[in-house]
Length: 161
Image (cartoon, rainbow, N blue to C red; front, side, top):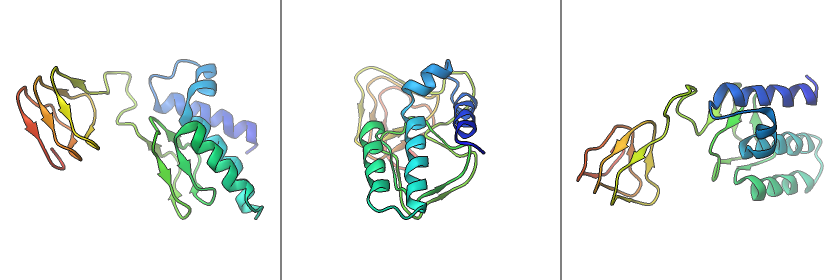
């Protein structure tokens, strides 16, 4: 497949995997996950050609601009999409198949993100995933993973919380 064809397929993938995507101009100009994937295409090609330093430089620039770090040696299949990719790290020996989406819980155009009540505390590294409601005055412990709604005045700890 040509480079232009691959980029076109990547844009189509964004629309298939992110219901918030509005138009091609938005995807091309304001989707860091899309940008990280395009930078990786270049870095990976240079890496396969055994060009020294330049693949890592491209990867480094990509990390600075997108917040996602993908080693040039990582093998990633077609139809790859990073949604909410700040802090994503993909190492040199990673192998990712076709059609993989990182950072999303649903492809439906519906509410997909948490609702947080008033006077809450969410500990560092906690993950609140999906269309859940966390009640008022609730504390979520550091590192907890919350996938179901939590009533008011509760404390949540653990995996799952």
